[in-house]
Length: 294
Image (cartoon, rainbow, N blue to C red; front, side):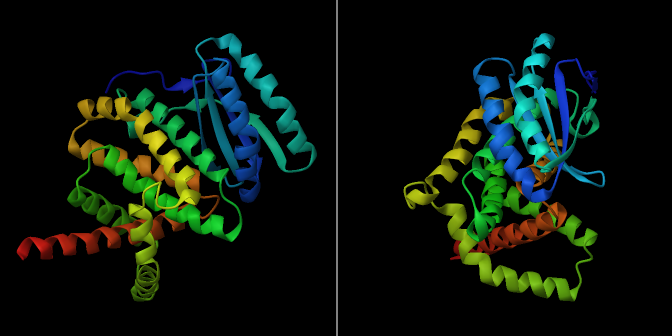
């Protein structure tokens, strides 16, 4: 494994915030504080990337990391964030803020592909906060999981996965989560019913174009912008890793995508989405197989 720096303390090129808040408020912090301030800092050249994850330790919080090439830029990042974070803190929407050491997950993402993965995390984070800014209420919650299904499919497409490759990877993911959640007859029956109710909706959401429904055009734009921006990164990763490594990395990328998208009960949402998407791919596979016979 290529030797890369694993640990970044406060004052290094990565500034790492832990912002403790409730699950619902975390979306508000991401859309009303992190998104506009990160965009401002990027436009000014103060930072060159940032990304976030949601976490429980066991208290719910969001972890936000900002990267800059000039260590002296740390002051501007902190000062720019301070006012908005203080306002939320004064209103008891944030109950604790910590700066911490960023420990890279090199074993998971690989030495050669660690910094490339961080670039992908940035593009993912930007896409997710753009999407969160578009949704609201019950309709927004339905769109959230549908967006998750399409985002997974588009990520696999970006990495050149064939329809059969997608099916194989989702079978692996849904089986793993099925074991974790004790997939028994009762749970399988629930998933059968959910798939019957949602299959047409999923199929339509996976295939519709931006011109089909102007209301959804911004969602497609967010997905497409991420795909276009990640092309060179994807090419680079594909020259470094083999198929088995790629499947492992894609599992991690998809997991982190779901982590950023859902406010709480992330693993439950993952289990449901992987199962639904696997079944969708399986139906499509059956149709392809039938057509090839005729």
